[in-house]
Length: 148
View 1 (cartoon, rainbow, N blue to C red):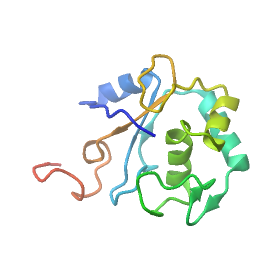
View 2 (view 1 turned 45 degrees about the vertical axis):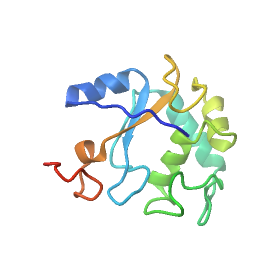
View 3 (view 1 turned 60 degrees about the vertical axis):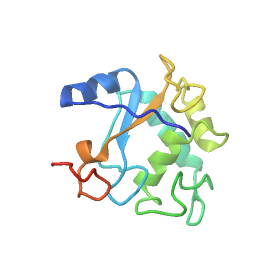
View 4 (view 1 turned 180 degrees about the vertical axis):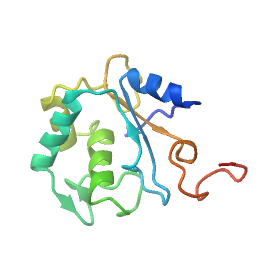
């Protein structure tokens, strides 16, 4: 699904962005589409219920990902695909397709936007943040002039 990239410039802003209802996350240091070490969401028990519902029925397939939904923009598996990183990435960024993530989110009562990055007010949205700024691990993938 499509995502809207946000530019949050200081720590206070990260909470402000999340308070709008967006779930914010970073990619991993080696090209993983989601890094479990950093994601921020406004506390909402419906997200926990959605994760529980997804966990009750989802299975991981080594060549096709969680519930055979693929690996996002990666051609294949990645470090963490079979546990937290892959689980949350599938649930929280692939709900705009038909399948178990969408069913889990709807069953939990999460108000879904028409697409992941639509920007609809009052609807669940997800946005990646700059990994180099918010979850720095090493310089791979960062701008050449990036100064940690």
